[in-house]
Image: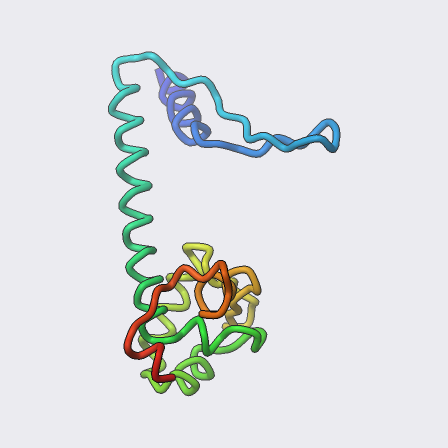
Length: 147
């Protein structure tokens, strides 16, 4: 019985998409294991979908906060910065900026450069920091227009 439980746990852990090493240079498609048609399959899929939605909603809120406070703009093109440096440039309290940076890093929006330093990539800067970019997704806010 314990082997069945372990096999079941392994199946749940390995259910997500995993990249497969390409055999040629044409493409790299994610490998998705076959879904179970068992009694819990629909519940598992609903849980996965809603869980991903909750994570995305929280990350979106933090992106909106970063846009409103101009955090992406103060980080863009400056290389790796500490939370103290970002807070000083933005005129904000370091403690809250540090929490925001770690959350953005966990979401993959801001890169962690090691040694408590964070960086906004050029790609993210084009989307969230550079209002003149055709790719800019941030809209405008009263604060962003005055800085």
